[in-house]
Image (cartoon, rainbow, N blue to C red; front, side, top):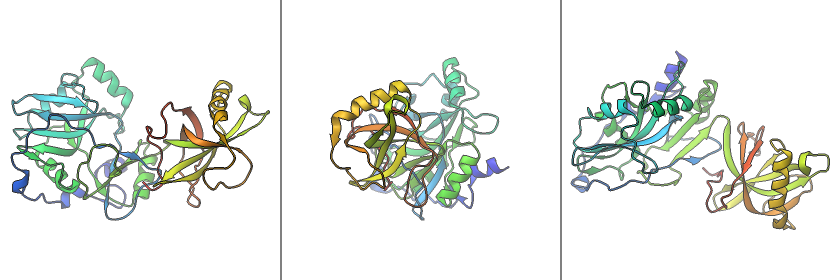
Length: 340
């Protein structure tokens, strides 16, 4: 029962769509051309859930991001975030989309397969996609971007979701991804206890903006995020000569120290890390660092780190483990932001 409860309303929360009333579209929304393409609104990685009445929360689905489109000529198209046509990959979703009561629409959501515990299973989804399986793949819609001559992207999220609830119907292959009003930290804790991947936080009054603008944020249970490497400590007794890396996250335009990582290296990866960092040496750390001497470097190398949340005081990573170095530079990668 608890799993059913969190998916519908969450701990201490209520499903938001039950209290939202869609306003009638104004004249400025009528006769908008059907978009030739849409760039997805993406969730920015956050280390902790935001708080306050401006935020709604959803379960983070482990699936394929999809747009369902019904074009003015009547064509139904399933399109990936990258623009690939997957129309015939999920016939069950396609059939359900054919029953949506709208002449034209663009729906944003996630294709998922649920396991016996109601948790999305990405490996099972991949298998179903390869088999073109119809029965087990579901679509959880979380946004409506266009309907019958109206471009809804400029409307607040709560109004777009009310419009989505209006047309989503009762087909089991096409479902509403519920949002909840709850304490973000409590909702995350409950999601993690249920072995879910994490949660998504969204600003209730935000328009639909393409890219990672910060209106949508993802917080994972056992999180993986990208951090700037700002220093290292070497040791002859450590594997590959590397004892630990000093890490930083962004906070707005600033860089903030978030702790060290000293596990997850192999002898080979430790050597490769040192080879990349040594040419970047500088005399001082780019931000204030607590305790110990280290070799400081320019923050040009990014490490992917897994960790189990952050400490309440000081905001340091808990149980951090090194995953890999990214090839992308600081201007290209989605680096963890403490202000998110």
